[in-house]
Length: 296
Length: 336
Image (cartoon, rainbow over all chains, first blue to last red; front, side, top):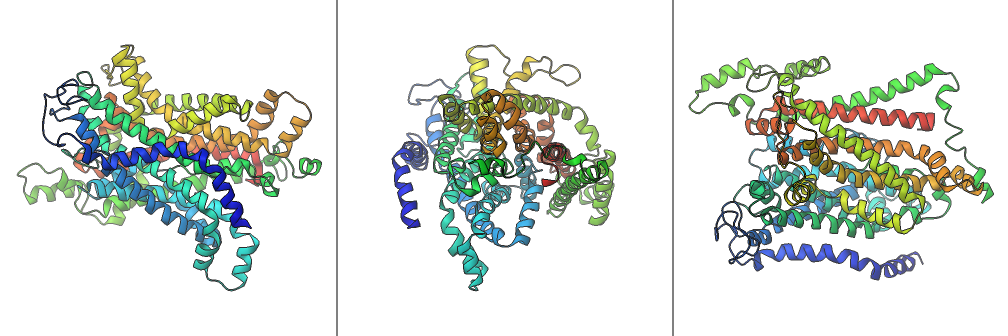
């Protein structure tokens, strides 16, 4: 009964959701396949430094005369790849810890305290600290930093969504039946959190793009001559007058990626406001508040 | 329906909570507890930061060594910087120095406080201006959207804020640079400074402030809108609607006060993002803030400087979080 209800809702939402999810998927696929489509190698000069568009380089040349279009096509796959890795790891960790935290008040308090402390550290400073700890760490170091910085809030979101379930009859029945904590978390609670987890994955992906591109711009992640969207913006910033595309094209790519994934995540997110029933009134004020404390 | 309207006490009747009961003493104790909690959190963060940077391989003395400097020279500077003393002793000294405004000594032997004295006010000016703009814009947009739930304006603001809050600040900065500086030539592309190291002209602040404010406005508009939507479902707001009060009055007088604690927390989380984003935006506009100091400190592995900046940023965020605590306490009383 409940399964069919969930399926019905997904099916109803499907056609409307597709147009909002498609751009994100399309852009991701394009960026991942980009290196195959690039007309020139990413690290060879083919034209004059900051050459205007034309003459075999549709978007002009960068600071060393390398083809901006080719570097654009090369520069997204690693960024998106590491952002996906961060999103997968953070979502998995947060789902597990969040379900456990909802069941065990002691763990829940520890996680709240950790998130309260972590909120005091701006992500950019967090990356800087880790790059100090791991000199020359490059992209792996930034990936680890993004995971460490993102997990506490993500756990908070899952724990918040799991809390009403942990107090529900079927979970209490399973607990009274002597099921272990892990069984309760993974078999009883997790299956009901699909929408939350899916939306969390999208949001974590957006945040990972934010953190990783920020690190790239600060030259803490990938090092030259790697083609990377964020690094391209930094490297070519001084030539924005000569060939604006060398800065605008990668900026557009990151901007479109962030916006499209965010809209996709927003589409699949459970709409707290639409929920009706006895809990809606009593829990008023909590939904927005939980979101407010759950930044990065 | 009537039962739902009259059941729990609404937020407004609970407003005098703090001064009721045993009176001002209890309120003071409670506020002291809130302050203590924030200070404790800050202390924990600083301890973690200190431990993280101290347990790393390599230290500031070897990172700043000149080419050809012998091991003896490095050892001498290590002694000078006090890096040969036990970890615990250095931690104690650093932590006890913090409340007095002593952030320690940089790897190059300067006081960290002196290093930050000139650029930090510039960054605070940038972040503060962006903060004020963000909150003003978010409150206006959020209330405007909430005036007609589900209307065209509501959906447009919702879409706009969702689209913008994910944008990294430097992407917004590039867009602004392109439109306001390169195409129209209205604003200067880089920050020029006067003799004192401050921005020479207020027009140089426009683009950095906008670049910081746009993503945060998107974020806070969503928070304001969601908090108002939550309040719309509370019994006292429903009752106000049923009494036939004008929508605008219900929104501003009845829904908004209850939404303030949530909005304040959203503002507090934005503080850290604004300070972090400022570091990045400063780099793009050559703005004379802590971004430049941090970039140099990163190259030198100058941990005292970075720990000092983290301490300042953490203190700023803690302060705003504490203000959010106070607003929450004022609104909800002991039920918070």
